[in-house]
Every structure is written in C-alpha cells, then in structure tokens.
Amino acid sequence: QKEVEQNSGPLSVPEGAIASLNCTYSDRGSQSFFWYRQYSGKSPELIMSIYSNGDKEDGRFTAQLNKASQYVSLLIRDSQPSDSATYLCAVTSSGTYKYIFGTGTRLKVLA
Amino acid sequence: DGGITQSPKYLFRKEGQNVTLSCEQNLNHDAMYWYRQDPGQGLRLIYYSQIVNDFQKGDIAEGYSVSREKKESFPLTVTSAQKNPTAFYLCASIENTEAFFGQGTRLTVV
Image 1 (cartoon, rainbow over the protein chains, first blue to last red):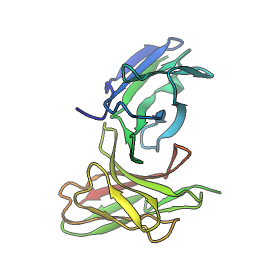
Image 2: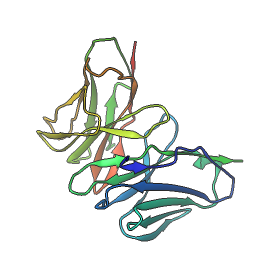
Image 3: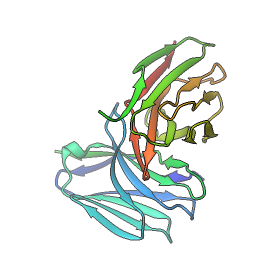
C-alpha cells in the first residue's frame, strides 16, 4: 500500500463548479497535511495546510481532514480555467522528518 | 531574493557517467530534501537532511548519493548505478512544515 494515495484523474469540471480532490494516507500517526498545486513543467507551490480534524477555508479553497478515516480532501469553489493543474497531497510521517507526496490528481477546468 | 536555486536547469548524461545536481538555499532552513518526478507521477523522496553532516535515505535512494557539508547546500549525485535516471529532479527546503521548491533540473540520458 502506498503511503499517500490519490486518484490520478484527469478530473474535469466546468467553469464555476466545485472541484473535489481526495487523498488517503496509510500512517495513522501522520501529523500534518498539505495540498500543493503544480502547473506543467513548474515546481509545486503550497496552497493549503491542515493539522486538525475538520475544515479549513482560505478563499475559494477548503481543506477537510478526517484522521479516523485517514482521509484529506480539497474543495475548490467557483473553479476557474487557471485552476487547471496537478494537485499534490503531502503528509508528514510520524516519528521521522519524511515529507511524502501522493501521485497527484490532474484537474481540468473547462471554459 | 531568498529562495532555492537549482542548477543546471537542463542536464544531459551519457550512459555510465556520474552527474551532480546543485541545490543552494539562502533561507537559513535546516531541512532539505531531494525528490524525483517522472511524467504524470507524483514526487518520490530520494534523500533528506535535517542538519549539516547528517542525511537519511528516502524511498528511492538506490543509485543516488548526497552530501550536506554546509547548511546552504545539498548536492545530489546521480551515479552510474541508477539505471533509469531520466526525470525531473526537485530540491526543497522545509521550514515550519512548508516546503519551498527550487525550479528543478530536468535530467536526460543520451
């Protein structure tokens, strides 16, 4: 089982819709959870971090964490074509300093 | 400007050669990481270092080596033992759990 799993997509949504991206992780002791956005050929950039169960909102982005289910998600409201990118979920591993990424989900927002 | 600088941006390696990818940071971060990304794939951890003169293997360390003689620098050597080195390599430093990435080095075997 991979440490961090994501559906590779592509996930296609129409402009203005809500995009929902999901991530599961295997280490129950994981402490910190992140969503990075990566445009083609570029480096990833951090868009959201979440550390406790529940929802965290920042503008059009909402991160949701459920540690009991080992599940973290990212919602993008009012999706724009500029949101088209690969979204990477990252998790810090308990007891080490390992910073582990999932395979990413490619999002396409259709104009 | 503070940040992570990777060089070169593009690198070509002949079969059997060792090559070294440079990663320098002026953010004064303790932790530095190397990742490999293949087309359509996520980031896989090669090596990481929490402090000077100390580093740990990640998930795909075979065929790679690193050093951490200075806080600012964390070079990655791709050795001839790495049979499929063609990939995009990303260096990152991490502070307060946020990762800051360099622009990456695209390595191609010719």
